[in-house]
Length: 425
Image (cartoon, rainbow, N blue to C red; front, side):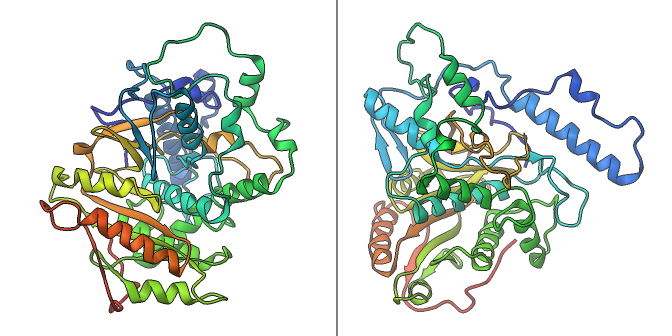
């Protein structure tokens, strides 16, 4: 819930990547109202102070500034493994990582959930990581296989430099221009199908009540579970909110299934797949809330988590550490690779043509030790259709049963569950 890195978590590999952001300076203080009126003004001031504090503390001030990705060890990113000692594979990894959607705290949007809150800084991190996992599922669902964000192709500096010798020379002015804005750039002038799909997908997560997967919409859907803006959302209830959001959206041929008590009921998933024309053609996002230990993460599950992240069907993990949600997307050695939502950025008006895209993509990798992981998390997987689900089921089962030392994290069971819409707080 609170922002920042853990004590042993590495800082971003290149803090200069966040050129679109800036730490608050003295000028920001002039924006604060001189005369606060009632509770609403007090709440707005609190949000601004929280946003400023998060940006100062987590937006780029760190004693650790050197990259922490090792060139001697492979890195796994959502089912793909890269040998970073190879310049070509390092470039592939950088493009793939930069193409993930990065959804962070925002400020300056319309009040959410009937409250006076115009920022989710300090409370919305679980919803943001849930958004990121759903966004990854939508990228796979809608974009061509192997697609990468064209903006990642125009970097002039290797943001994910893996302790390789630095080359002399200055960044080109074109590189700086590209990294700072989208409007008027070469990419935005290309009206191709993939760019439009990508931009529309990003807009679905815009901070506006009308966007189907916005913070506003997720908070609204959480009200039926007793949640409201400003509350803490657990990984299980976040999974059910995603299920409701996709069901209420106009995204074609996609449904979300949430496992019950660490059990995926095959009959329920197959039934969802069959709800299409032709039957069996609907894609499914499978979300599995689990607990990997008691009060703390059980290290016996490390190898199993790694095997799941190595599957191409894996969408990542909604997890983090206690009250501090992160989106886990891979690993290197004994460290989890993640996207961190704990940076408060200004809300983007996604209704505008060619709105800036850079703040929705992260060019700096972060890692965290497995032992710091909160045991409560939600695993995500994607199946293209009914036939693909059979393959996904086989691959996941193999990963879950590869170790004889631990009981499987979750299981697949024939038949249907008693209450497929059961929720947990």
